Image 1 (spheres, one colour):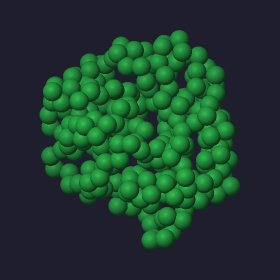
Image 2 (image 1 turned 60 degrees about the vertical axis):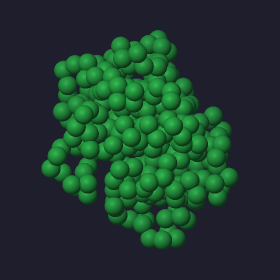
Image 3 (image 1 turned 45 degrees about the vertical axis):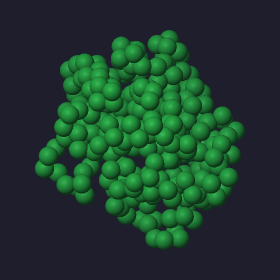
Length: 271
């Protein structure tokens, strides 16, 4: 079994400016990063140009794996199309390889038939937008009960149905995989893995939310190591990107030390 290739999502250290975030990746020995379009007061929201982001990443010697994310992608409207084109242009100009696609997560669009129709419509419309810019689309099912796309299997079926395997891949998020309770792994169709742990011993699975997501350690309740091992054993060769949302992680005084310790613990447990 090969060792996991780690990456880091900017949500882990949202208060670092891009250059400092890229340098953190370098300090951790990582070559790949994920940038975001939802960090208030930081790039991309603050108007940082895509060309500047590309130059900063190149200077640091890191690759921008994804921009995270086009929200509500499976609610396809003229507004969504405009957002998709704008974000895809930014991703292309920043040198990103892929755009993460996040589904509606507010309790709407969940009915049988409606889900599949909406998903296929969005994927079909997104395909030429992404392909013309040399981008992949990473579909990220969310495990929350209110989500319009919980199942990776459903996403995989839709990708197959529209003939989109060359353009679309899945995001396997260890947090959402655990919440959804979906046993299947799709290593051949997986383009990215997000990793985070939940260590709070009191929160129930149904009540787990993003603020509970911390770095993976010996108190992890999500079975991250087992999930990572299963993906590697089944042939997945892509990135495992740290995506903790907990404020206690985001405000750590020494994130490099903490993230390095998490990587070391995971590797030790993997043997």
